[in-house]
Image (tube, rainbow, N blue to C red; front, side, top):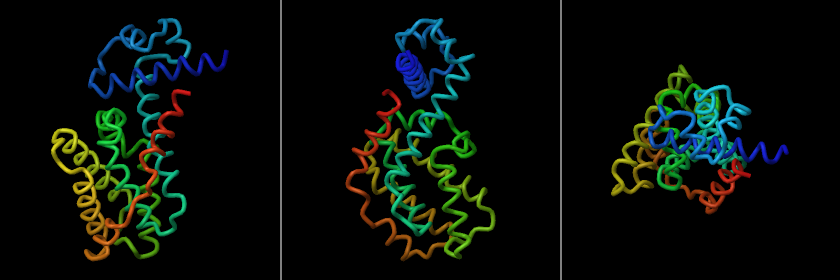
Length: 213
């Protein structure tokens, strides 16, 4: 019974993510339940409203990204390197997992204030880097807004211009952000040239797939 309920909830969340990714946030509940292949009664067993479902869909997407980053940055100790790798990996999601990242893009500015996904990890790294004197940052929350705005703008650019090399664009943006946070140009360029984990695509498939199981 519990497993069936979990599958139903996951189906609703997945359907909602599709609607958000497509920009169809005004769709009626009945249309969403049809897409999820569940009954209307089942919907209200899990969510009080469409808004609650959509928030759960965004939160799940953010948690998926957060789990993904944790799985690939856990061995790093330098907060600047952790920030760099997290941003480079997240930026690559726009091409590796376009459906997931469209949910984040359509969530808009809620992304950097949600307390989930990249935001709390980024804020942690900015604060740690500033405490060590590595980042020249007086207001970590303001710096987080800068990073989140850059990520969202870059994501939209990559989605709208598929001819762009995403790896080059992401690494250039990362280096620019590092310089903006006080890292010298030569070090910023060296940081974005470091190899990423070979498994970053397959690890993401595993992390994102957990929501449906």
